[in-house]
Image 1 (tube, rainbow, N blue to C red):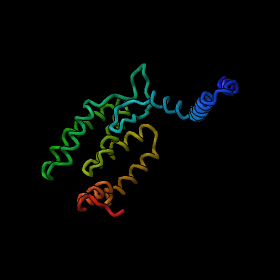
Image 2: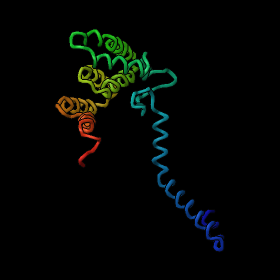
Image 3: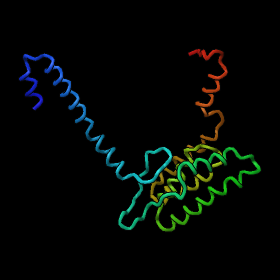
Length: 190
């Protein structure tokens, strides 16, 4: 239909150019149609409110409500708990971890009732926060969730990643920001 309009608009150059641009845009959209439909399908299946806001996909039966249950805290509350653990002096780490341990207990109850998504969500949140004090808890939760969800390859990936994460000087962003702060007048050698 647009191609016909382009042919008819021989005399009007501006209209012809505009229609050709629309036609090119439509062809690009149609080429990406499968990608867009995949993203929207995945987004519709995503459950949970993981801190990265992408969501996660776990088997969930809406009728019986089995497969996922939400965490009992908001992302803001969870982030505050994790920040408390990260900032706590060594003598008070155990106390700071107690609120997160309460959530781990709830995750274990959820796992017993086949709501594996709760453990995956909390594990991902702890992992994404990135503090070394939370690594063992994140590994425990993710290892359990991925095993129960039959995603054993992810267990290998998370173990390998956490073993590399313990190396020193991996925080590129912090080093870059510190280097920028040390340079006079904000000048950088690049």
